[in-house]
Length: 134
Image 1 (tube, rainbow, N blue to C red):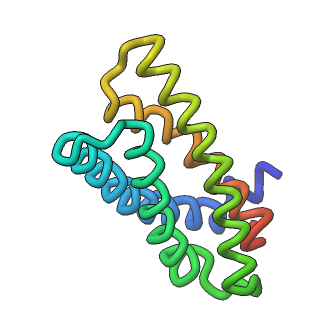
Image 2 (cartoon, rainbow, N blue to C red; image 1 turned 60 degrees about the vertical axis):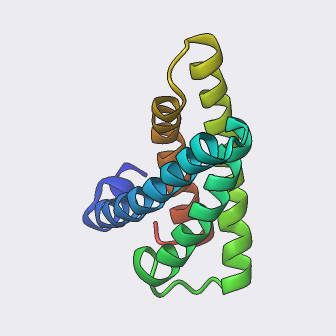
């Protein structure tokens, strides 16, 4: 198992995913900030909406660049990608709540911290179960 993830292919996929995730995540943070600071939207709702929009962009990048050549169909791939993302969203929201409500961490910092663990977990799920590249 370790060789699959730590080998050249696994590292290459992870680096591509990290780049795509970073782009999606920057969009996510920007959307959260706009919704909370400029439109007065409740921060938990803003986290969910930002996540869903950024996740759609990430799926497009995953299909055409990270896991290029997958045999998984577009619709079934998106369904699994969304399922994995929703699991990740649960991890993010749990971490976000813990960090902001219990520890008083500012909301954008909490979002970043909660995403580090969730992002790696979702990558593993997509690489193994969805796109079957590892």
